Image (cartoon, rainbow, N blue to C red; front, side, top):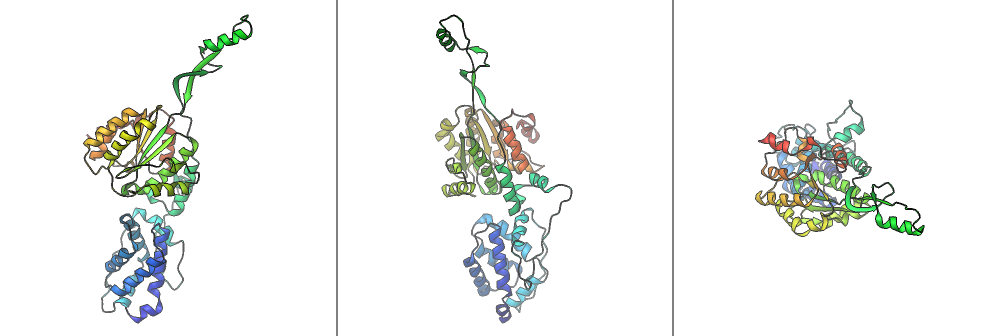
Length: 405
């Protein structure tokens, strides 16, 4: 490295700012990682933009799913024309600078942009060029209601979590065969009627009535926590935490490559404590997916415990099974027979061109009662209302199978 680069400290200052932006965007980047990255660049040197990217990626990225955020932050921060070439010239004066092609901003870059502008650099450092998204046709609340969870900034996610906390589940009680005393009932209660009559010596008959008792059915949620669902899982757990705080009979299970019961963890009053307890008890977060094996575990060990009393079940997954679908179809059939109603919520329905062509999707779909999207606040509010309403024809999964045929 040349003396200019080390004396001015331009590279170090901008690298510290870049690492801080990564940390704000959700990557576990601390001071030690920043020092390691600066040491690696000084030791390795580079002559091209991609060499610089690869060096930073090797030091600052610890998980595969963090690569997306890193690449977006890198493209936004080092976008300023000529700045990367100046760094290359300082670190490797003999290398000829190359013009880097400007890449189109990815859809998930909003969170990174929010992190980059949160701590502005000093005036001597080059400011990053950000693409700002301005909408004048709708209010901020309307935009938030229909914005995809994966495209939200850090501030919008916080506002979305606050909106989810205000959701209220309507009364979804069902009538049972058991009868309970009710003054407005239509059935005479002989035992209570005779007891009332005995108090008056039998001179007059005071009729007592009864009616079918109402019971709030259990709600069971099976949530996919694989890497493809990571942008939606946390906010959906916020939704389940709200339901758990409103009613006692809510059971939540997480699955990726194995099944984990996190019902007790979600009963913490504080949402951060609840999510921390869930993360501590799950070993396969953002990993692979074995839907069939996980459902087999649930049917074998848990279905009889939690699916009694006319329970409703929410299946939260994209249906992209990594293994064979024969076991998946068999376990879905068994699961459907064990519950009163099954609702499948799938983030892939946010795409207009979605078609039920994947083998896993076609194995699950014949055994569910409703097929709904779950990618923004509006769809989450509709799901909350659907839990206490009859099934609607426009969410019938058979229409998706007919389109893909």
